[in-house]
Amino acid sequence: MDDLPLTEPVLLILLSLAGQPQHGYAILKDVERMSSGRVLLSTGTLYGALRRLLDDDWIERYEEEESSRGRQAYRLTPQGRRNLQLEIDRMKHITRLATLRVATKES
Amino acid sequence: MLTIYRRLLRLYPAEYRDLFAEEMMAVLREESDEKANRQLIARSRFLLREIVGLVTGATREHLRVLFEIEDGLSLVTGRFAMRNGFRFPKVTIVFMALILAGVVVAIRKGEAIATSLPDFSQPVTPIHSGHSYLLPGVFAGFIFFYAAGLVGWAIVFALRRSGVHRLADMSGGQK
Image: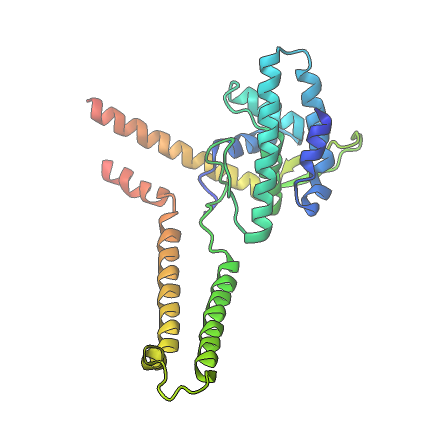
């Protein structure tokens, strides 16, 4: 899997879309909230990431019945969800390994 | 502020603007409204972040279009790659071919000038003595450096793997 591991901003963007479709502004706020204000994405950075995720078919545009002008929602594709799950599994694996190594060293 | 954003959005490639400019403007508008009542320092920081984000974003998109380079710049969020930036740009082949063609043309021109000089019973020795080896040498050099570049790229490509596939072995060794 060449696209893994994901960077934190991209991981947070995908996590933001994991629950429900979101607009750009909602994603920015969600990323800020999830990272406790540590990751502050600019609009340029967010849309650079969204463009690449769209190109790689990890996310797709989501058409809402009631959508105001200029507000476009995005959601994960099945492939994006699968890749996100792979990344979470990878992180779990590293966390387990790190815990094991640190515990071994301390004992 | 919105005027500044609108002008900065013009820095993006046209195709990108068609897809995202309106959305980005809507987000910037919402963010600006939200920050309107904040302190001057917070607003300045926000403005700076957005300007840097838009400029670097536009540069990144142009680099992607021109050279097929992802993540040419990552000034805002540090390492921001969703995929590795080590891609072998196809335009490199074109540039190398152009350079080679330029060298060959220059050699031919030099030859033509040397042979067209009148009353030269003795040809210019340094040019003609090495002349027969020059073109093959250039080609050999081109092929050598091209092959070295490919090998280097292959090594980098191999190294870019995260190494996660080895973790199973490592944890297996723990048992």
